[in-house]
Length: 207
Image (cartoon, rainbow, N blue to C red):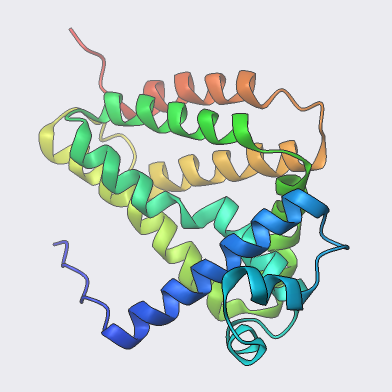
């Protein structure tokens, strides 16, 4: 049975808001002037936070870069899937909209995003607790989407929701990493292949 998550306290919510503000300020500066030419001082000014506040969230710039990479890979999954669940009634439509959403994100990515995504694994290696937390959250979101489809009867039951969710997450991760490593990688063609595969393996055939 799915249980509702406890609401965040005011202090924790404020902490997350400040962290997001620092990440957004850094991302904008990285895009405008490059990673190497952006200092922590500039990020603090752009985000309107003290250096002490910055270091309360990130021990150094490398950690911030890895955090941005993680957000590119994982942090958008939960809000995206929640929106899909609200706006679409069938699993097929939800998966279609998910691929559309991911493709629209890639259309706006550039070399900075490639660099950030490639830094995410090193951040996980230094913070296994964060890796566990992000991984569990991402998997749980996709398991909920597929379980909802099982409940309404439009998802195949040959495989468990956990296995199907792992397939989706693993496929999307590999496509993203491949794109980050190779600027010529045909990400949109591969996402279209993934669209067909997900529908074939997850959705029941419509009569």
